[in-house]
Image 1 (tube, rainbow, N blue to C red):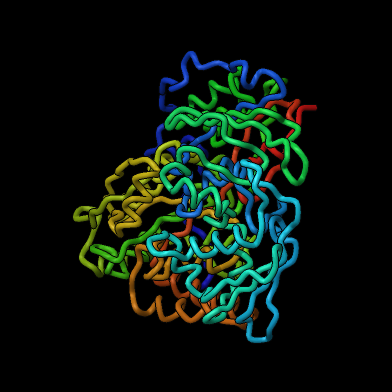
Image 2 (cartoon, rainbow, N blue to C red; image 1 turned 120 degrees about the horizontal axis):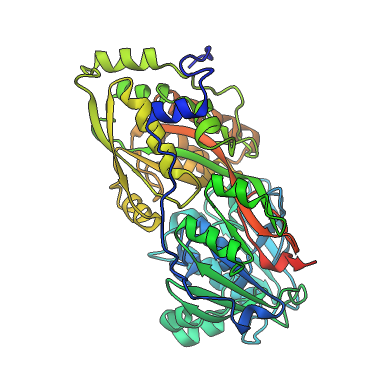
Length: 520
């Protein structure tokens, strides 16, 4: 799509826009699940309590694709590498790593000495090999990611060598991404998966003191942590799904930090002399998944859906500038970001496209759009606004609300609605982890399965020429967006509220890491 001038709601105020799109101004009321749950003796001294927006699905962190809960997992487990706040990849368990041949079919790494697991065992190359082998094992959700690692050999107590069956260009990016954690071979083998899930052991900065599903996680600083013990000795993650309840947590002093609060409350809480409000730009691309099913098999319907959305107005009036309009699957922090990619707001063309397919305002195309409500700030309101815009051109979409766990369940089964709101968190910035897995049919994350897109993306998963790989991902993204196979909306800014006395590192990949916090 060539860049064109914007039309439509230019110049209207927020009240008019909300009326136009159907977004209500009233906040949803809720009752906190933690009524009566106050800061106990556990967190009273040198402690930190976080009102968190999601529960841990499992302690099998190696077998999950839930980016939101990387923070509590990273408290307990170390990764092969890690990241600085600006997404730069730096060593963690691996002290040195890289390819040792020109064809990039041999990857070698040295392991930090002196790392201990919480049960006292030393972390060695045997644990790394065990973790690599398990990540690509049968039945693992990310098995296909690691399938290129043909064999991992222990070459010394603190060194490993991997033979690859084909180039794996995103290997280094994946070492600090979803599921890439180091597990203790001896402990895991001895107790088995079931007992490990009950009593997880890692080498991270905190040990698990208590975990009650649906309620909270209590952590205690690990005294033998190889980087030195955490300054904050006790941490409690309260799992508080309702955003208004998270507001109540920090306002009452029951929690010291929270995130993903309603934007109106974010502004109000920022005026509290005891609190600090931070709008942290993060590497989250908000889009609508499009399923390759009726009525989305009709390209004209898909293009009408994307052309009818005024992204500038969404950000200004619904998000109150807590976002950045986005026209593709890569935000500016990503390696394959293309600033030339643009989707005009063009409701006139959208209406004409629908008319060719036999749809009008009087006889609209109808389908369901799914969304969470309160998982991230203004998720429901954004979808409500989009539905209001669609209605103006002849699209009658019914909103279905579900929780994020249901989204993952339906997406894994390829049973999402024709359109579904999602926040894609690409912590590494690698296009394989955004354009690739969002749209590649065999990926468990994708719901779009067509031969043309798979032919564009498939070869890039093993493209060894880095410059060529990035440019071809830009080409694939251009094709996908201009054929309406996904509907990009905006890049997120994450609202964080915490006590002013709490010193914190803000991460572009959404991490909330108590190890790097301290009380002033």
